[in-house]
Length: 254
Image (tube, rainbow, N blue to C red; front, top):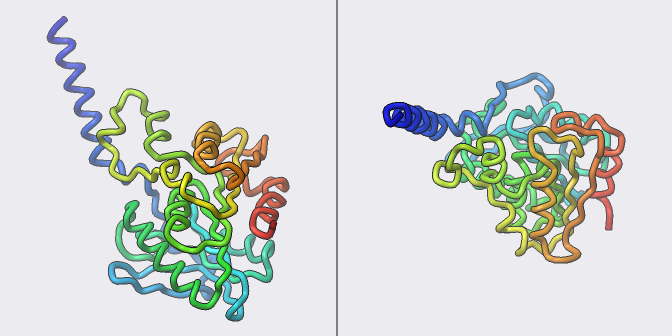
């Protein structure tokens, strides 16, 4: 019996070590360069990276949207939908490091640093900037909003913290000890004072809606509101007409 318990302990430790070593390959799923917007956009040069930005330009002074996508999303394919829905906005969608031709490797610190650089570039010509973050991008968007004068914040299928989501998927692993990138939106939410909307997929099989509700509870009263698209799943929420209406209201509402 002792030998069996020892063997099981070694297997468990081995699995924990494997998850620790491979964790970023499980969190970030880079997509190769696509052809969805081969002629639009630009490259943003930072001290540590060269980032591809899918964009639709507008004259200086026009309102702008900065968008951060999910962990396996090619944001170039999101640009046409946002362009149709928000014809008067300048649009800027960031390809994370390692995604869509951007240089470098993704990490929490890298994504947030690049988000700040993109916001600063956009804000020079567009004083009114709405930030949208979807799934993993919600964690980037919250950290950006905590450090820059964002006008409105829209979080699509968001989570309270990546640690909480990982613990739900891997209950047998001491996630708190192993996780490098935590995206703790719940810890930053109390300090935010800008209008914030959470849009949740009612049948989300990746990020359970309870994570968004716990995030909502961390905002100061009256700052944030949660809306649910009942039949939507994590990856198809943008296909539902109710989502389109909620997103428009969240971006343009008072």
